[in-house]
View 1 (tube, rainbow, N blue to C red):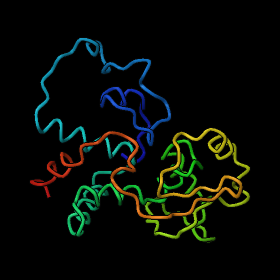
View 2 (spheres, rainbow, N blue to C red):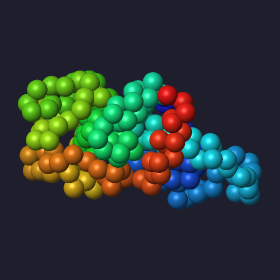
View 3 (cartoon, rainbow, N blue to C red):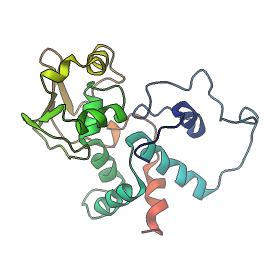
Length: 204
């Protein structure tokens, strides 16, 4: 799942919503569902189908495998916050997502590659684990040599999304400082998180 290399816009069309973490492209030009009967198909979606679709939106947007996702669900359930709110916070705090939201990469898969290849530092130290969880006060930036990469330069010139409120971005120094923990309003797409929690309520 985390290495999905299929047609990304097709996935957006199947969910009926743009997933900025998966692709910077939009489904606006072809907003209908994929397939021969996509424009005219009228099918009734079950409760299970709605729950599954919401869960898959998160998995595809953040590039997580089912096993990884289940671990986050279990951790979120133990939190004093609501399980849904905590799950979204944990997803947003992943280093690959922070690199993407800071504008250093065009998508989360691109950000994951930058992190895995050692191009990103946290508080001045190289971190190569995409799932690394950032904390308040952390400073994230590409290494000086990595600023010359075409992908980084292009992303900085044309970021996919504006920076969230919990992340302070200094464009002149090309760094991002974590000012607070993200909340459910930080997620850059419509999501019914309660359906995701319900999906796992009888499966974990």
